[in-house]
Each structure stands twice: as structure tokens, then as C-alpha cells.
Length: 120
Image (cartoon, rainbow, N blue to C red; front, side, top):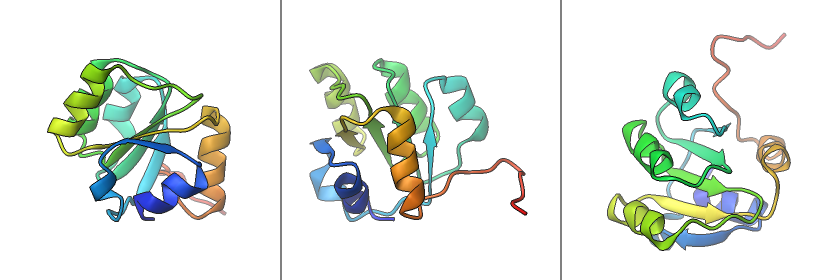
């Protein structure tokens, strides 16, 4: 799914990375615990979180996360936006809570890493 589609589905505000919205994401993860992100997220993922600290940006960089969506209308401080901008990372902000934002993306076809779970 293109990041521009994510923006539209979540009615999100682009905080940085407008020029990167045609990039694709392969999966998504809704999480506030960065150790879980390190353990379970695959490359080129979208991270949805309510966490607002530098560890989010650092974790995203380590895991090759394409973009971060801040939920519940949260907007990071300028220092975090600057960090993301220096790393060519897309930051979005949506008014939706985490559960609803993840559900909307799932319904539109963006799946998560199931960690070995098989549907059926």
C-alpha cells in the first residue's frame, strides 16, 4: 500500500516526508512497546503508535520502518520531527485511536506480520 493511501484512509496530517508518500509499505504494526517492534516487525513496515519519544524514531531507523503514524491526534515535538526528517522518514498524525486506525488499514488490505500464525 502506498503511504499516500495510508494518509487518505486515516485522514492523517503529514508532518514530514510529503515527497515520500508514493513509497510502499508491506505491513503494519500498532505498538507502544519498542521491544516488541524490535522482536516482531519486518522491513518496510508502517508503525502506528501513541508513544512520543526519540526511541520511536531510533527503533524505526533500526528496523527499516518506512513511516510512523502517531495516533489520537498526537503531534511530536519539533526535535522528533527534525530527527525523522534527517533520516528521510515519513511522519503522519491521525485523530483515530490506535485500535481503530489499525482496523481501518486492515480492512483496506494492509496486513501485519503474523509471527508464524496461520489463518485457517
